[in-house]
Length: 514
Image 1 (cartoon, rainbow, N blue to C red):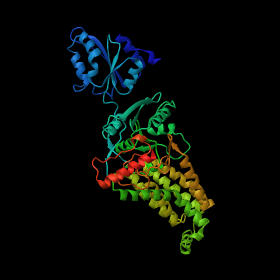
Image 2: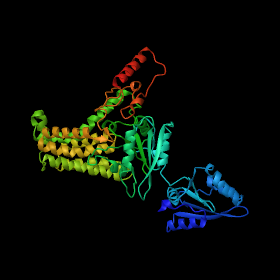
Image 3: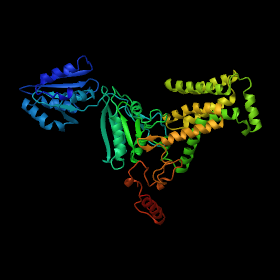
Image 4: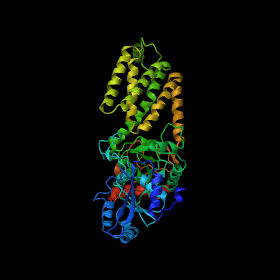
């Protein structure tokens, strides 16, 4: 077993083992050298060519060390490596060949020296990555424009840049038997609930798999309610959003090679919030949140309600409107259900094509394609104009939802409500709403109710969570995810009579709840 193989003090044995393991790996360079001014000492450097391309330059730590060794004796070199090597850079001593292989494959350089039974792992710039760029999927008018990159180290540094507190912990784990993908768990030590943290760690260790290449694969493996279309993880590409959720007592999971962070536990209300909600004034933010919830209802229920009304409950509409609907459907050869499904699937095709086509051409396909297909279908009497309008409103409603994966769940539910409304009428719509709400109320995200804060274990009304956003100065409590003893997040350093009264009322409520 690799974990039992120690590093030999004889360099030739180490070199033989390394060359055998990396046989036919042209991207991994094994460079022997002899250093010292009088009696030479044999050394060996192993690294991935692209990841450590600058290792021999004068401005690199390893390059400076090797240049120093050229003028040292073999005894001085060994003494320096044994006693002072940890001070030259981000260096760690390795004691087994398994650690050596893992360090090389992680993009680091490993340095061997003859007569020394340990190796030195010297961190380098690592694998190539895209770097920090602007967020594409979570556009905001106000707030940071930085987005996560493909490097997990860079991503955790972007969060650390916003939370400069030693109580924010970053734990590393490796997953994937063959890919050995690095994961990082970020949390505030004094805010996170210990049971939640242990639950998440156990979920990560529950499966063994060949490789994890994106946080989405990790999300699907650790979903407890795997059959539910609703995501149990909240995703973000914004470091500021991740930092805000950490301060709420949540945990952020970063996966190497993925620019998307996972926030857990998640809640229904959290998916409906935008990153900039706390940067705008509370009146406008509350209005926008109400608009998002209305858009969610439109995206889910509007096609089913239309079918229920025109097929079963025409009496609830004015006579002129019913006659207008009937006139618009003259000459359409399909039933109203078939007509609506045909146009909905056509718009789904246009949406998917717009996503896959790169650049500005994708946006043009989405806009022009929708207009052309809708107009052509109406002209050919395949669909009625009112159906085109309903499908367009439904598509707009789904686009208003900030979280794309959350919106996708309601895009699927839309077809269920379409059939329920088309064949059972209003009774089918009510039945679908009842089943959906029952399912949502029964969902748990790592032990926390999915419908928080609408379902509360402890009555707390001033955390700022919910459809309406309270003024920032009144948001003095943390959400339920944080520890109870750390629930106060906002204090006044000097309070007047009115402000002090508000704070005392909050403290009284705190004592009452506890």
